[in-house]
Every structure is written in structure tokens, then in C-alpha cells.
Image (tube, rainbow, N blue to C red):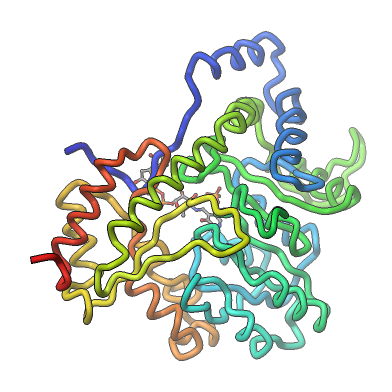
Length: 374
Ligand code: T4K
């Protein structure tokens, strides 16, 4: 059996991309707000249903820049259950991450745990829509409003996700997307900041271009985080296929759910009412006591069968040497995250994943379970 990875990018037909490449070669305009960049920014904002999009070279630089744009300093409350880039973005801005615990069902920052983490140094909250499941945005906003804090969402998993027909990216002060090759929507590397007013968009655009406001004016110590024309051209092509790709992911998710829902010791995530999901990941949570085998035993067994799931997000960020000295990194402060990280495996999910492959993966999960049919 061929290797099955946790994800694979859905790329458009090469011939279509080549046509765009020919135009780039012809124009000799390869980056710095080129024609494809402008068109992609516009079409992306329309597709997502948001006011302003600023394209970036990748999601991490977009996160670092989002914090700069709002001049966030001091301490920021965030989750330990995410990809390291979330916390690294704070570190690069000399901001102290303060970890608060997650909710046990959807694994997002638990709003009930935020207030206790606020200090006089807190300036913002940086929650993550983990696996593309929306955070409790209304509760988080209420806390932010009460304490005068900014909210920057790491929405790197949440491309196309909507809550009651409204993009999840419309919540908070800023949201950040990633278009990495492992994401639902990819420009190979890429990202974006979503904002809600023109002045902020302008500042973001200065910041990602060294701080240049015009040819002779530098308003900020900006960085080079621009998306190039090839990335933007690929983004335009991706937009044509995104709905179909999400519906293929949904089909795989439904098949997994059908097959795995009755296995003792395996917990799945359900869809949430009123949410348009993107099926970016398919996490399962293994309880060793009920399932009979540990998460790592199942993970290794899948690997032996050429199935390369991933333990996103294990280890917790709070376990890494750079962050483990923080007082908020203590296990007793984040018990739910500690528990969840021990049990998770993200199973392969991507548009080209075949039904028989999902079946095969499910058979392996089933075959190790105490509740397998005799
Ligand atoms: N915030 C959050 C919440 C994030 O999840 C991420 C990125 C960021 C911020 C930062 O955004 P970016 O700066 O990356 O735009 C991957 C990705 O590199 C990373 O983008 C992603 N999150 C994270 C969750 O996953 P790895 O180290 O697990 O990737 P890797 O190379 O092991 O790839 C996983 C599997 O994907 C491979 O086994 C096979 C497949 N794959 C991968 C690549 C790169 C392909 O089929 N083709 C490919 O080109 O981090």
C-alpha cells in the first residue's frame, strides 16, 4: 500500500498554472503588488466575505505582523494547544505568552479560563480556531471589551469557516490565515491578515513592505513579508476549486464518522450547528483505558501500515524548553490541554483521499479496539 499522509495539497491542473506563469514571464512583474496579487486579494475578500485582505508570504510572518500592527506589548493570553508558530509570533515580538486552558470538546481556548490569566500587563488575547472549529467568539469579545484588550485570531486552520453565514474571520480585531501546503487552501507558502477597516489595511501593507508608505517615506520598521506573483496566481486557481475540495473533505469526514463512531475509547468531533466547517483535520482522541491500547501504540500501528497520521498538537507548546519556564506553562494550570494532547491523532484527510483508503484506516483503528466486532 502507498504511504498515506495526514494531508496532501490539492493542486490545480498544471497546464492552468503554466498559463499564468507565462503571463508572469511576459510581464516580468514577479512580486510587490503585481497584477495577480491585486486580483487575488480582491477575489479572496469576496470569496471569504470579509472587507480587507492583506496577503503575506506565510502565516507566521502574518501573525508576527498582526501583533506589530496593533502595537501589542507585555503579555498576551493564548492557548498551549496549537502549532508552535502561534506562540513563536509572540516571542518574536518580545511579548510574554500566558497560557490558559482549553475546552475539552473542541480544544479551543476556554473563555472561562481567560479572566484569571489577565494581569496589568495583558494587552491582548490570541485564540486559535483549532482544527477550523470556531472559538467562542462572542464570549471572548465580551471579555476583551470589559478589560480593554485586543483580540487577534490565529485562524490558520479556519479558511472558509462560517458562523451563521458570516465568515469567522469577521470576529476579533484581526484574523490571520495560512496558505501553507498542508492547509485546506494553499499557495504552497502563504498567508493573510484580515482586517475590517481601510486605515488598518494600509498600515498592514506598509508593514509587510519594510514600512514604506511611498517611495521616500518609511513609517515603521517593517519587514519583507510580501506574497509573490506565483503564489498569488496559484491562489486564484485554488479559489476555483475550493468548494469542491471542501466537499470532498466532508465526504471523507462523514465516512470516518460512520465507521468510527461506535468504537469504545475513540472520541470524534462532531459538526457544530450553524457552522460551515472546512474539514481541515480529522482528530480522534484515544482513551487507553477504554480502547485497550495507547494513543502511541495506535499511532505506530498505523505507521506500520503506511498511514502517517500526526499527533497535532502533541507535545503542548508549554513543554518546549523556550516556554516551559513560564508559570502559566505548569501542567496544573492547563490540565485539559495536557490530557487532550496525550490522546490525539489526526487521521489523514484531504480531497484526493479515496473511500477505500478511509475504510482501510478505519479497519486498523477498529481492529485494535476492545469493542471490535467478534
Ligand atoms: N498557526 C497555526 C495554528 C498553524 O497550524 C500554522 C501552521 C501556523 C500558525 C503557521 O503558518 P505557516 O507559517 O506555516 O503558513 C505543518 C505545517 O508546516 C504548518 O504550516 C502547519 N501549521 C502545521 C500544523 O503543520 P509539519 O511540520 O507537521 O509539516 P510536515 O512537513 O511534516 O507535513 C505534514 C504532512 O503533509 C507530510 O507528512 C506530507 C504532507 N505534505 C507536506 C508538505 C510540506 C505534502 O504532501 N506536501 C508538502 O509540500 O507542520
